[in-house]
Length: 122
Image 1 (cartoon, rainbow, N blue to C red):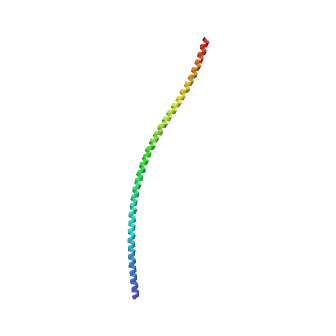
Image 2 (image 1 turned 90 degrees about the vertical axis):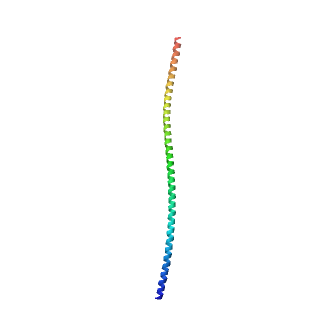
Image 3 (image 1 turned 135 degrees about the vertical axis):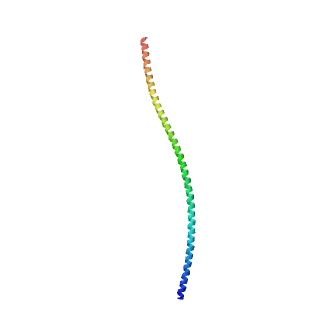
């Protein structure tokens, strides 16, 4: 019975030591978890700030590009109008050139007839 009592006492001592060791391990793990949680929070805060900055920058860049696109679109439309006017003017010039050549031809014919008529009347 004495031996059993000693064994029970030893087992209680071991159980108490292991319980204290487990308690220290749990405290240590809780401290590590808290530290890592705070570090993760700081990193998330930093990443959120960076995300906001990048989003703002991208938004500004989009706005600038949109403005440039609108400007280039207006310029292209103005060029289309100028090309249309130039094309129309070219067609008008071609038509006037044809008319002038026809008149020149008519003038030459009339001039030749006039010369023939003058020769005949002499």
